[in-house]
Length: 279
Image (tube, rainbow, N blue to C red; front, side):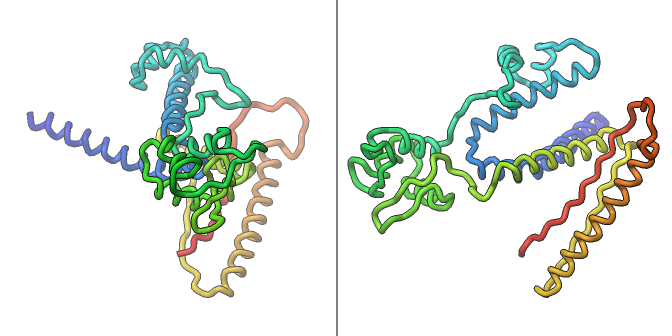
């Protein structure tokens, strides 16, 4: 009985550690999702699709046929939903899971598209903040899901989706509430590098004997004049390191350009990350 209790306590502790580790990963990822205007329902849909696809890939990697019941068992999703997700087609490289806007984006969408809140030209009208009729208050109360009007307005101002014309009037700027400093190129690079890093670290956890190196240095530079000097040193050192390793990789991996059939070997990946974080 004592052994069973100890085993249960260890299992509870392990699960708590796993949840804490996952939470640390999810917090910045969800912050990014909020930056680009995704709703929680959209994120839930994406998680469900990703879970089913990951489970299906594991079955295929084990030379098994895809089992809907097996995927349902490992993911906890109903078999009907697993079957539906497996039938989803990719559109432009992405799974089409439908668009479910959060309350703020729903408000912006109605403001942008509804004739009631548009000028005759079809452009979104400038709105008085409070009052009856064609005002932001009436728009937010009807489509804001019960959120306080002031809270919705503050969030739209913070995200730059609206601008204040005067003390009582606001102007439409964007149909989606998102961080405009993010661009498509940066987002694509972010997703690629983040996925590579997570895959590499998880592979090391699953196979501790695999070759994986993750080194880290961190410190403070208090003098403003010293930061550009250090930044230049990092760039120079990184360029020299990568150039030398690239030359070695070509020489060792390709036999110095020697022609002839090559065996399928190991993929080598190395990324240097440098970041300046203000206090």
